[in-house]
Image 1 (spheres, each protein chain N blue to C red):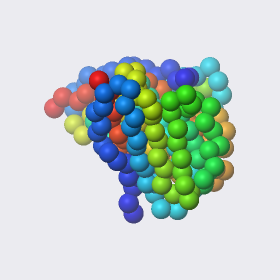
Image 2: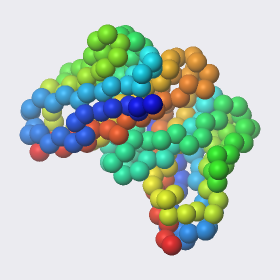
Image 3: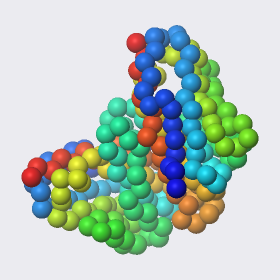
Image 4: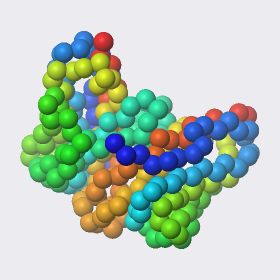
Length: 112
Length: 116
């Protein structure tokens, strides 16, 4: 099935560093979402974006909906050990409740 | 509020055997989804229910996979017979309903299937 282009595939950083990851698509989406998945658990929603150009924060996390509607990025500031996990972007073409298309994920490792 | 419940959490079976996964969505959530997550990949939709009706099952391999959502609450996903390539995590998610602004999907912990 189709998946979004998410990069980088993995990141190894020191505690306190900032992190940036992005997601691109050849198709337009009307919603972009960012999820975090811990080992053995399901994805947990971090941030939802509904308008092109929208910039939204959730604590140390900030995400933006690209103006072309074909991309999104997620920034994590001042990383801490509990930020470790896999971060997925997801896009939706149609109305809320319809199918999400996910990226392959960015695996974040944080050393203290 | 209880989250999406899935069982079993882990299942190991021999190939050609049948297997079933169960999901109980968040109370009041009309839409239920089954996703397949292969190792190193993001989730991919298998089927979406609006109440009892399967409204999007285009990605469900119907030769061996089946799903049902009787009474519009709990759902069961079945594979018969299982193949080696079916080894993956099967995620269930639920949401309030299609078209509700800001209505996003909440995921269960998944069932990790290993086919030997």
